[in-house]
Image 1 (cartoon, rainbow, N blue to C red):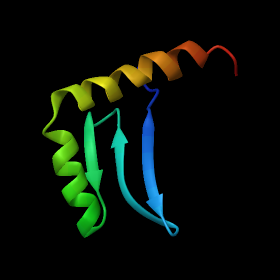
Image 2 (cartoon, rainbow, N blue to C red; image 1 turned 135 degrees about the vertical axis):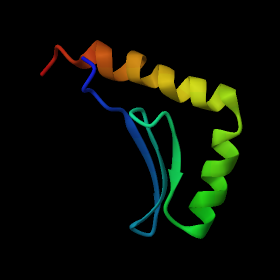
Image 3 (cartoon, helix red, strand yellow; image 1 turned 90 degrees about the vertical axis):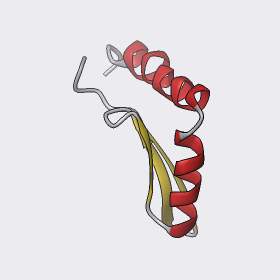
Image 4 (cartoon, rainbow, N blue to C red; image 1 turned 60 degrees about the vertical axis):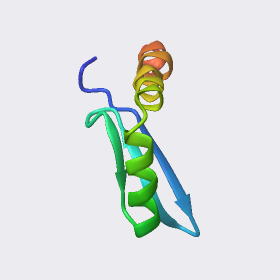
Length: 66
């Protein structure tokens, strides 16, 4: 179960702006706008905590289905 990764990507016009990766435990920006958004999200512990909880709530509960 440790190799399961939760990724939440945000895209606009087929361009990935930023994403949250549970393996890193933070947001990563890929454009100028995405970097600013990632910095903002990473500075708020409640946002990071909620996204980390998504791995348990979404991924780990559904791992047995496949």
